[in-house]
Image (cartoon, rainbow, N blue to C red; front, side, top):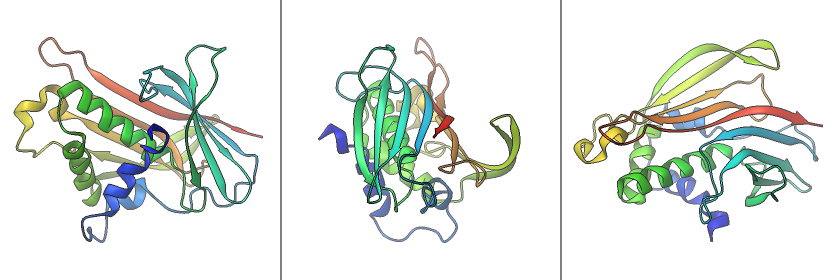
Length: 214
């Protein structure tokens, strides 16, 4: 069950009726982002703050392997160099790069665990934020030492939430996704951050594209 948990956010996002015509969703969950990448391609993302859902083993990297017949396999590389990769899930590469779906599900789980809030409620607020225009900005990013044109999408899912007072620092949770046609797999970086409030520690997780093989 835990190996397919990342699917739940994507399915929830697609449910519940039509969304706006121009949405942050269309950038964050763009289809076809793995088209043209050959079998055997490996996309490696440096990870911070992400972990296995059951054992909470921290990952230093998340790896996407493209296999035969449009298959894509996502795995977490543990912080210990000698540790075995932990499978996250298998996907159809024709749908697109699954790392964004996995990252947002990690955000849902992290906020839920820290606040005691319902993951269904948190997931729906992120869905609502994705259904709107978000804050979209054209930026210049760096990929393999070269400046590339990119787009940054910022989401603040609890900015107008009726339960902000109950969320502590997570009331100001900010999710940022940087995407670019110039990088394999579309996603250059993702982050989710919330400030410290009172005795609580600040929250932060991130993924960034580190390399492509072969």
